[in-house]
Image 1 (cartoon, one colour):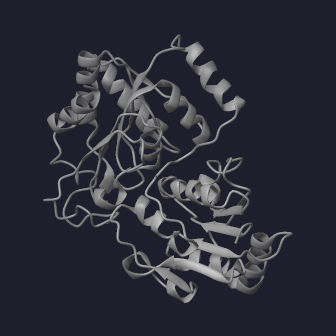
Image 2 (cartoon, one colour; image 1 turned 90 degrees about the horizontal axis):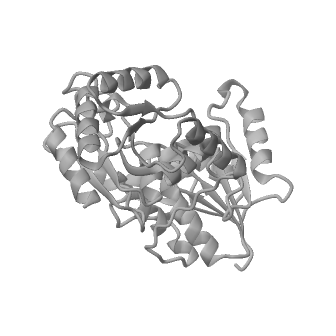
Length: 349
């Protein structure tokens, strides 16, 4: 199989796509002449377009019109196969019904997916080769999925792509702020799940201590629909005497450039930006609540990170988006400011 057509199926979310980048790197090393594609949702697709290890990025609709199922499937099949026809191999890293359907519609004769708990919903109906992972960390589980192709590695390298316009956007922002060479404590206190967030006043305390101890200004990052909350947090920090500012609005690629060039330290929850920062080798403190740090820790080969999680909490590691045990936003209350500052100190000394 010197020049195979290999399709990666990992549709979302941003953090999950970042977790799969080491598998892409390993595939390209093993099959330098292969045509490698990636089926993905529109949101994280910008991390993949133009990637040096990837030949093709196929954007899959987030939702299918079940009332027009036959025509939807036909359109999806045609989009996946393009001009070249069926794929040789489809690797389903998602393990869900929809990702299994995408692998099947690709026409690949070999459809490799997970066995056991990593195979969910109706996924097993669509794969014909299954790997039961041994590793606990999802990054290494993804590398294990390559074994049927003869690829054996534990090197978890994530490569990112950006272009000159992304660099210029960040450079222009830095010039406007008079901070072209400055590095910050980049903080992403937000998350899509209320079971992943820490109370804002504790981040204020952490930012104050980081500024006093390490002389770092705090740069508060935010995602879509989070700007108002970020502005409020920066305001609270400034009132408390913290040197803090709002990050510029960025695309994912611009965020990669921002962190790569201007982050001395990163902290946040179990989110895509945290995993990007860790994969770039930025000292990273990751706070975990309802997700499981044994599975989701950013164990990239060059990562410098520490996890803070209280497994004594009844919701820890459950992956529940709504908690039965805590009020919204309070699942991480048992994590103290001192614990987070201790982790920062160990990373920066």
